[in-house]
Image 1 (cartoon, helix red, strand yellow):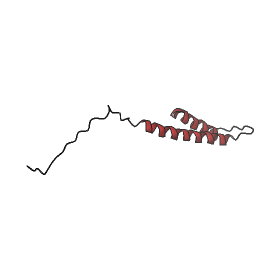
Image 2 (cartoon, helix red, strand yellow):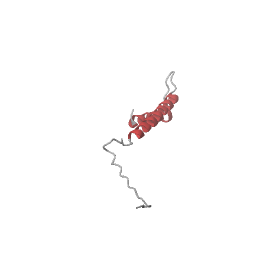
Image 3 (cartoon, helix red, strand yellow):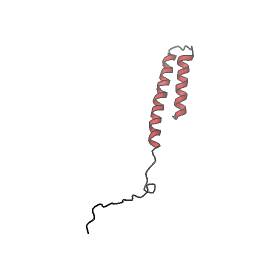
Image 4 (cartoon, helix red, strand yellow):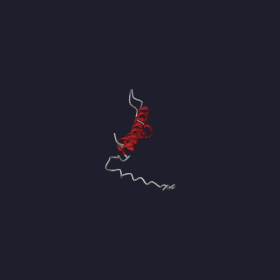
Length: 78
């Protein structure tokens, strides 16, 4: 489930909870909307944490510039 799916799940849950007056026998619509919003937020948090890890650029051997060490000697002995 991507970011779009999570946001849609949160939005539909909010509409069911706060903007409708539906009643179904054996189903609490307010609780259903709250559960949908919670699942959407958990999915969004999980997706963002995984996406954050993917954004770190890989460091392959060809991508890293060579290390150049410069040595400075202050004490010269002849």
